[in-house]
Length: 119
Image (cartoon, rainbow, N blue to C red; front, side, top):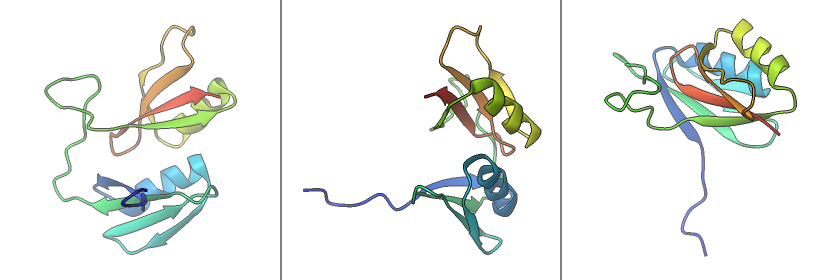
């Protein structure tokens, strides 16, 4: 029997509302909350939360001395279309690979790494 249930994944960032808006465009869902804490309630029922972190320093990928700490894997049916969409929303390519892999690595507008993964 589990001792707990996952409530939310929380990302520190300089502007919670802006980053929640980025992920709302990528994942769908509704944005709720104030300036210091914003929740994105996704259509699948998961909550992705964003917390104001003054002095936030974005992780670097790959960099052993500035660990990414975690990343999100986002499943997509079409890597090329999803890449075009996230770049238009302000994501940055970290590692697009050589075309033979089933994933590509990006950073969100606050610098958190995430992967688009072919499903």
